Length: 70
Ligand SMILES: [Zn+2]
Image (cartoon, rainbow, N blue to C red; front, side, top):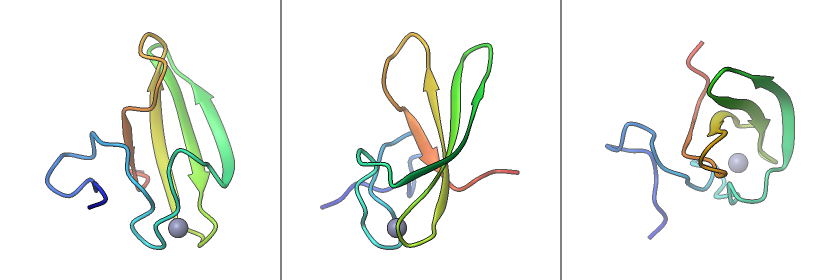
């Protein structure tokens, strides 16, 4: 089974809910913003699905993913 953000508050790296594109293989990074705690990246999948992911400086990996909140 492919893990999704359903019921996990989005704290999960998962494949695209629309086409199953692996999150580990980002299709296109639309924009990237540096914050005090980490890097926020807006990515677009091959199918057009836009997601936002947050990568904290101290973890070295993506810990959240999901649709843009705002
Ligand atoms: Zn997709």
